[in-house]
Image 1: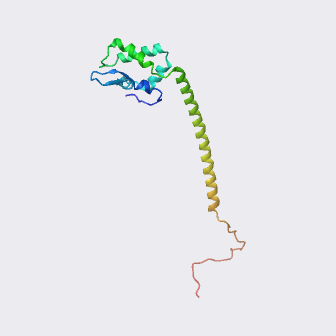
Image 2 (image 1 turned 180 degrees about the vertical axis):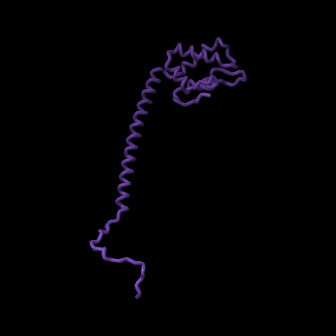
Image 3 (image 1 turned 135 degrees about the vertical axis):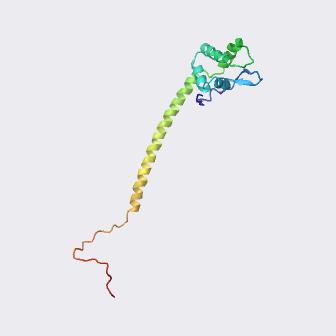
Length: 159
């Protein structure tokens, strides 16, 4: 079973449009039909949008013909496909949308890099500040007393 992904919502008019009724009188949407054929609906809608109208209509008509159990005549598949292809976003809209999406992804990537760099800088700053706070304010300097002649023992001297 292929993995399905919701790539764009600009295809909703097309994907949720009815192809026709099934034999049980339930409406069959393009989304359901493509899913039954094992095709990712959003990717297929994007592919059909990139095609000129006639090849898109022929491609969709052949998919509709492959569907079992519809209450429509196979000879109607071309007319059904032509009606559905009209619901796809216009070619200019699709190109503009994909360009806008590419720009927003690039801007989001740049923003993520800036946020990451700031987070790293703040972590370094916090680590340095923490090290300063942990260090005692007045470090005891080693005394200059010579301890070489002292003898240390565990014995306690009497009072």
